[in-house]
Image (cartoon, rainbow, N blue to C red; front, side, top):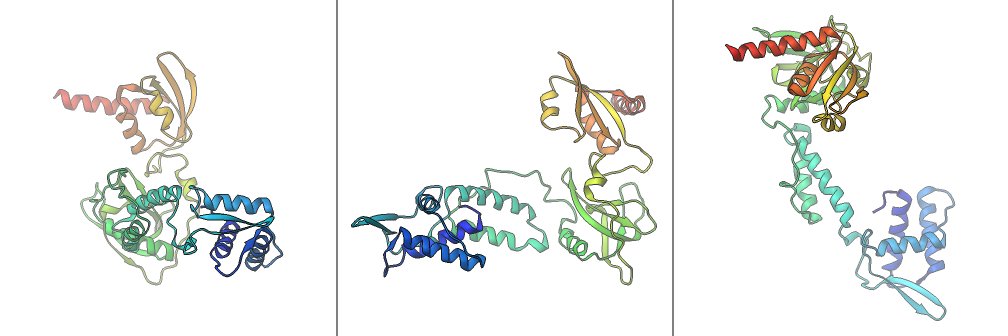
Length: 336
């Protein structure tokens, strides 16, 4: 079904005409009725052309439209239009196949919010829609790479609420490299999912840069009363522009990085770039050289190491040295 609001008004007006048992609607009558409906909706003089009217009728009849049983009946030299089945209305009609496919895909995507307190209604709504529109179950047709067993997943709903309310939080947190938990004031900005884990981004009091908190490492949080919220000084897009993943080192700078990629791996790297800045600087029979402009971080090194011998850092030499050292440490561990 078309999403244009005027189109919807026209279809509904024609539906009333075709289902009217007490009056015959000829072309001029349909034009006048639909034009009046458009005027009531827009508040201005509106009209519909004969050509558009016939296009609307054809669409309503079509499989892509409503499969409406519209018949044309000759009366003298004129023709009037009505539903062959006078009990038919658009309100009782099932959605068309194209709409059904779009709705099914949308329901599957909404299913990713399952388990979040603020989205409890989604599962119930999905069941009602599948039943109402006779949609087949897509459970075994599409899968999302999501960790439903991630610790503290239930916190997402409340965190989202506090972010929307611009509430300052008192947080207790224990990172992987700390022996003890710490407590601090936190100004939450947004949530981001990466590598099947969730992260809360914001700013800690007395810190000038943003901090990310792994959801599964948060112990407790509650509103911090009497503290003014500090709004973000940059956008999400700007913050992540020069990094891979979620961590942003404070002691590293953005730089150009050249990487040689074996052509056996190149189709993968081409279709799924390592970073949005990825550009090709050289092509050979055996390899392709690309250049990235980013700040190297933990996720970047992990990504490169995960590609194994199919990639090689060419420059800068300090990043090449880091990769070399990490490979050596792994090799030594297996040698021993």
